[in-house]
Length: 132
Image (cartoon, rainbow, N blue to C red; front, side):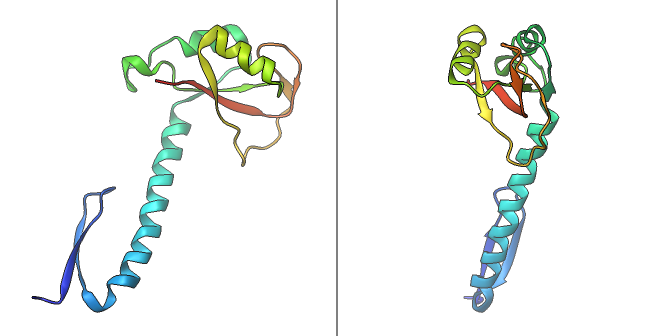
């Protein structure tokens, strides 16, 4: 026995050897680093595959247009659009496009606008996408 363990990261495929007496601290810091790395990658993916729209015609066009870099089945990625905040509107958008709200960004600044479906006032954009 060499008094060490091999640690492999699933997010980067890196491997390293760590002495047994320091493995607990190493793993605690490593897990924080992995979590941050996964978060950054997911956020970058979301940002790169989000299209901002201001009309329902544009919304429908984007949601139905496949993006080859994503896959033929994933549609247009995420759509950032104003929503009036009502369940009725959310359900109508789902009925018409099969897209649902995926995220109401917590870090988004208020951006007054009009709901893409109803034209009613909206305080901020939300992210829509189809589920596959």
